[in-house]
Length: 191
Image (tube, rainbow, N blue to C red):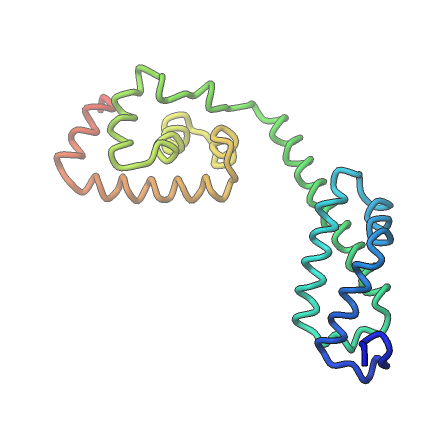
């Protein structure tokens, strides 16, 4: 007997899941409408895909037979995804405003590869670090940038900037254990 003709209580878990997913597909325009009423058009398609993925994921975790009103369940999921997207867009906008308010350090202004005064030091640092780690280290320790300013200058996330600085510091500490390397670095820095 097809799942459409069975009572909900007679459906297996897989049939109930399939029935809800089919309902989702059959009423696509309703879900697009829900998203369009809450989001700018540029976000609708991505959010629809996220609803689709979230719905499939949720139906894997729960027994679909427990969902009493599939339309309300999917509508709520659409609303939640739209709300999350708006929060994400809002926080990104606030971050951009904050960055615009900061003095704008940029990689172009601090192009360490082209800076002749720092070229020997950068050459030394790139022997033990990646170029990004070396640039982050110089921004932090020579220019006195904060971690957030380093992230903005290198156009990376703050967490990644902290990680790069941590890796750079550990690599430099390990290299400085060698007296010859330590003396060479002091000569380069002019100490």
